[in-house]
Image (cartoon, rainbow, N blue to C red; front, side, top):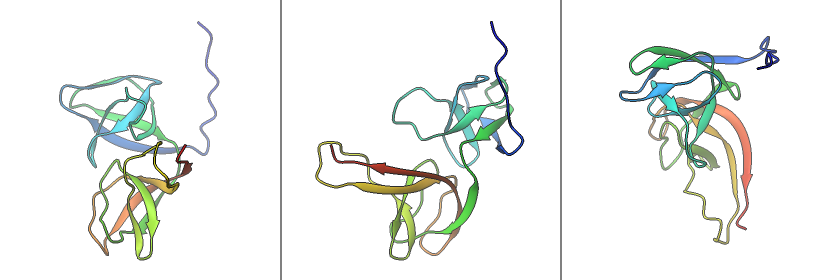
Length: 135
């Protein structure tokens, strides 16, 4: 096995608890389950927020290298759900609808919510810019 290159001088880190009945595996994708819990990512549609820095069992604290910086944003009409993709709306950011690759619209996404919130709240959003096409 080779030694993996590591350049983490400017990496953002987060600390979470591994969800009940789940695991965290070094080098695997980290799926946000709730505002405070995570697990190994498995599905293509998981809102993966980063990569685990070490192994951890259910209930243990685990560190994660996040894919992007976390900034406070205003929650707009529709609310914010931790682990949901965020899209801009007139009064802030709200949960993006599920991706419909056969639909007729394109979505411009700004990041992934790391906290729940209602209209007017300020919550943490990890900046991860993505455009989802309709086809």
